[in-house]
Image (spheres, rainbow, N blue to C red):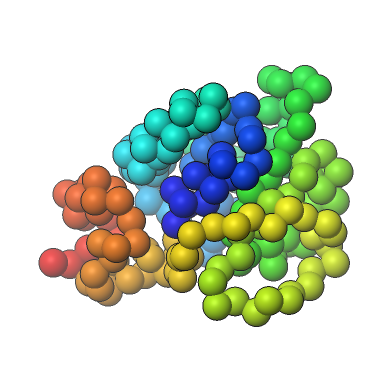
Length: 186
């Protein structure tokens, strides 16, 4: 799902650089995510095909470790400010799924994020055609391939021993199984 989202962003937004930013300490998650080293490794596995797509479109696709290296909870506003310092004068986009867009008003400094970057939202197939979040303001609707589940739901399905092979790349599923992540049971 994140891979398809990234491919769609590359194709539709005509980006020069796409930063894939694995979450560090997620302030909004009640439970701890898998270890940062696992999330980084899975991102590298999952997004290697996206890097090829990026090259064919003249775009660099970078796995950005900055949030994983922060000792404190990570916030999008920090990452955005750091990227703005790295790429002065560039136009920025924050790409998110519809589930996160509906919670955007809970993000730290969401008003400032909206002022610094264009928000891009990928809608899930079958979701209501109209939803409203006045804190989101104007956004770009990303046309994206069919994905029905969020990453959280995929992790839960893995934990319940369900077949998720059609939802995530084989290399990532193999890594999850080898490392015993998300309480995988075979």
